[in-house]
Image (cartoon, rainbow, N blue to C red; front, top):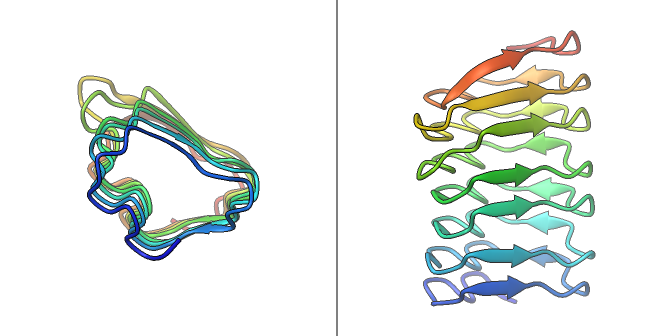
Length: 166
């Protein structure tokens, strides 16, 4: 699959095969009709803006096989209400989930301890004021960079002792 392969199409559901290793840049960008994504077990990387603007997706379950995310991979997924981050992800890149969950909000968000770094603006403007987000950062996260949660709807957070840089 090449960059932008399904950009702006009218897909509704998407099941990615186990044989697919990476989702290329802008592969599904602006597919606002997409409501469900199932990741194959062989996917290890999601490139920049791969799902940017997929505003109809409500639930995102990133499997443990994914080890690399690029900036804005899931940005502007306005319909998001549930997000699960797999144990294979060690860094959440800049603006990865910016403006996600802005329609209805994400009530609970857990950053697993396998994520060492939450990079600049990773969750910028995340969530909706009607459904405030309770954020749990697990022990093992070391770095929370500038504006990581700026303008998000987080109302409750416990920062673990493993965090050495904010």
